[in-house]
Image 1: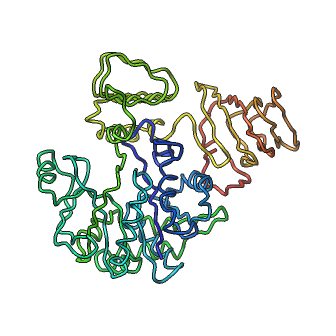
Image 2: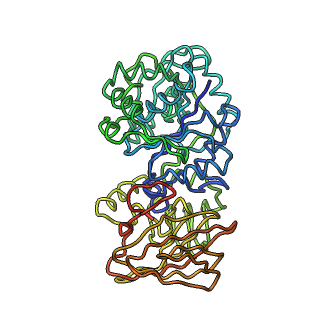
Length: 474
């Protein structure tokens, strides 16, 4: 039995300002009508049943994961939540424990949530072809033919050829400089390390115990002490999982084991790890420009131009990336766009909100968009999904004025229960217990005007929450 494991905990900082900590690239519609997570799930059709799929993600992303799985018909998948990121080796160990509860003879197919594969049929065929080797106790990594000297990937040097078109792994090589990468491409026996794996759960745990016993011990304890949630996910124990060393599968096991095998995989793969990588996947005009949104070009060549909220006009540019969002603007050399992650990290270190949040912030009940904020007041647009209910709450420092602009709102306000239709409003003083709900089958939109001395999200005291959230976010 194949149990796919989709790793969805990354933040995709090299695609800032679109991809941010609390809304990373795997949840965006980068290419086509489905998000990258949804595309990853859909290419598993024919390899497993939905109840066999495991998705591992950040605890802060849990409701986005559940919603996006439901949109694709995979709502019966198993969602496992990391309280903190500890890289891929611990995450896959947790998936192995979960999979072994389905069957003692289970093979894990480990995938990233944010890769492009242009030939899903070829991908599924390659996985099935490698299955006998995995069942024979091999740890299979998929290598992508290196067709250019790319310095953004790690490389695999393949050794002796074995059955089914696979090779023993001679060495894993860290990201090289440009000259060394050119040598690898010319040698024709080096492949890009895709970060995708196929192996039996029990084989992986055995090797992990041999090479990284501390990881195995921490993960075992975190699995035993996990929390079950009625929304359909399981959360790892924070105290024990937090003690786990942060290390990748490659460093923890694959570089040490004598069971590593590489299977070539030529299926139109791209990790979309930077703006230049995304540029390669987008349709380009006769001047080599890839555009999205409202863009007007003049004398512009080889550029990626991404407009989200406003008209973007360029003249006399070459090999430039421009990404516009409602609260940030990125301008960069397209060939240096892999460095954007360093800038995003600097934003995070300086406490900039733009490192983590967009103006539009997604919540399990819908979303809110910050329309204006200054000292003493803030204006938001709240969008509630059909049937959505916010927590029963109150604020110590701020008052709120709600105006319904679309749909019908059901409101608890102190001891009262009221209904507001379009163009009707209510005022909620600071300290008043209140709750907003949408019990209709249509979208509800409310303009919220906040006034007070402190307007941050942690001024929320939840008295009852249908989503059983901790903390103070929305």
